[in-house]
Image (cartoon, rainbow, N blue to C red):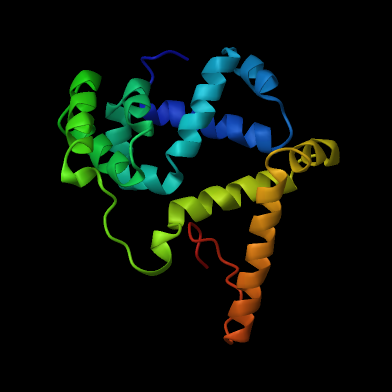
Length: 190
């Protein structure tokens, strides 16, 4: 895999590596299977997690085929609400990475860099944050006992416990209010 592959190809490869990681493979093993370096595999994993399937749908498949990995890297650290518009503009206007970075810098220094006002729960964590948390918990649930215990005993342990506690509190609240637990995935409604 080279830099010449499209953003869509790189993200799909990152998804495949993430799947292998969820199934218990190491990053080194996943990289070796694809004949790429560990650092390259790590970069693809990071970009795959940064640009969720929902983000990619919004950017558009055609647009992703017009972008390269350097476009994704240039925008990945931007505020979440700026990423998609910047990448769409880069694809539609055929912006070079240099021009994309310049546009991003202009936005950061302007009033548009501030988060748009949100109401209700969105100010605490929107769909992307919830999706990221769900993916992390699913990955932890799929780990071997030894892998999970190492993580749970480490820095992430208290955060995992807090998320589980908060999820139980929310489930209880939903039940108290007479609502049912939603079983359909937002990305796969029934």
